[in-house]
Length: 223
Picture 1 (cartoon, helix red, strand yellow):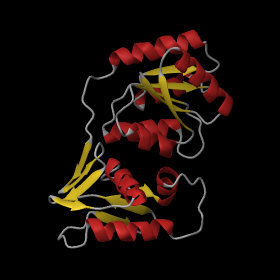
Picture 2: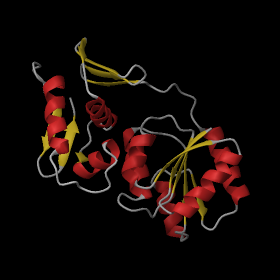
Picture 3: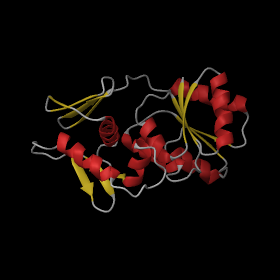
Picture 4: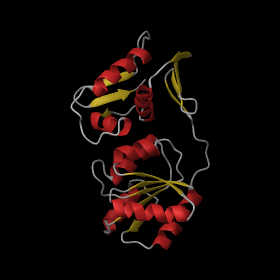
């Protein structure tokens, strides 16, 4: 099965990956909530394993956001936060199971397998749609109102991220980390220049502008 691991401790992450790989599973890893949102939003994972205490957007907030987005992938919190109310909070946020660190690898595997049996059987939607804008993730093709839109690689990644989070505000930091893999602000107008070109290709010539600026906060793609 394919598993997404959100864990910012390198040694812990490496140990979990080795354990899951040895059991025949494929693991995607990330160290912050922004990347986890982007990866889990694809709907291609069987199980999510989230640490609660990670830098930036924490695991709890990340899972809450995913549930709001409609992502129903079974999720296990793997964390050192061991209080009763910590567990209650995790389950109420949309978690399906809660395992305390330190943990036994055999128990982790058993819980992951149990969650996999709950995973919904559904086709992954490879075509993202917002109003008359479509992005085919299999063919990496974009069209609006039936007209092909030619995008450069980074423009495509930027639009894909916006469409995966359609209707939601995305911040500059989220875009830098998820689209450009920058974990710092380079102090350039890289986002603004790419967004300007993307708008010119996606919105220009249409009555409705889909890409919106949320002043002082970020951007939103919404019909």
